[in-house]
Length: 135
Image 1 (cartoon, rainbow, N blue to C red):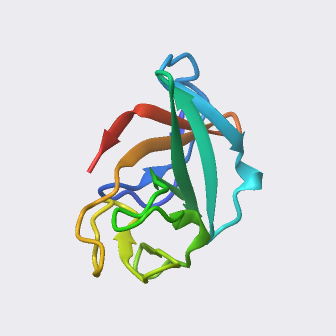
Image 2: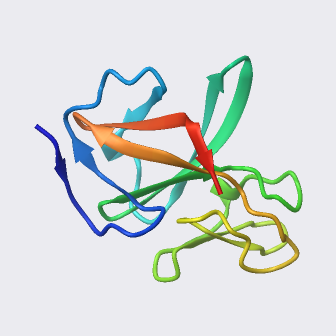
């Protein structure tokens, strides 16, 4: 049985418990309790012979996953500050803000978006669909 929790808006991926565990495109990341609320955590996901760096952010019941590399320079977004009220993450090096929901660069010097991915929870474990990159 599957149940959605939390707000839903474009880009937000509400937690879901149960179901959908057999998708071959989904990669398990960690137990939900290992994601602190209001912070980002970096994951390296191998797929198709490539290693993808992904930043996952938990804001209450909502999860967000986006490419972890700032589009302006090669710095980890997971090391930056998350603004839960604005729904953004800041690149710690030059201060660019990115939308958690869309990956859009909201402030300079970055002007290009970062990819966002489908993410959710099944049976208490966070999963990511690495083939779902958009943004």
